[in-house]
Image (cartoon, rainbow, N blue to C red; front, top):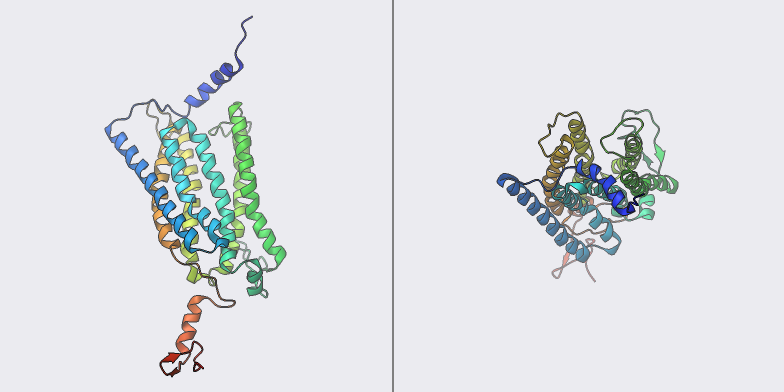
Length: 338
């Protein structure tokens, strides 16, 4: 009886599933080489811009906000980098897509924490809105349920909002690990959406967790968007939404088109492999633009808000405050300096 090497036998079992993702040995023509070079250069520039921005944030921003803002700014460059790796090495697509998804899941929780930090922290946030109420009839869960009552802002309510985003940041890596284990054993195929496969159930569970995680962010944004207008919270939230839509919804639509053979195969690439190529190339260009825009939006000094007003409101009040000049000296409160 011939004894088979376990390692060699495992590699032989994995080989057909790896080839289904497309072969990286396929030759590229001159336009293909030019396209790959341009996209790789975009990825490199995006990472250099992020590194420069991270150095600026580390030098200019208080330590309580550094890691949160750096993590949010890193979402677009990380997605561009994983997409570039998946473009050059098609067999790594499973790992690169999951890595980008996990990183952005943590970034969702960081964005919620950033809005609280911009209000001065949890204690000052509760003091500002001690008599206020959260509007929970917002997307993506309850945007149509306008009859829902408003929830009082309290420490327990804030805990549940943070837990809503933290569960996704914790469970997404766990699901990633389970998916990779099942994939190596042949029980998980990304394009097999039959009820007997594991992909459909894991995808549905991830979808539910994603909706639950996005709901607290929408609730918090509705509460603080007026207060944090001077902190450019609206364009920051728009960039966060763009990354979410492009990284999840756009990729899902292209995968569905590839599974339905609307994106035709081009030997040696199958329809699914070509769909993955299209997704990765689009993400590199889109994340490159978002990285440049993020540098403009986040490039400012992050001074703390005053206890009850925003900087913009204080500027309007200062115009109405008369000043008294005594021997060329002006006091800040309008009174003569002693």
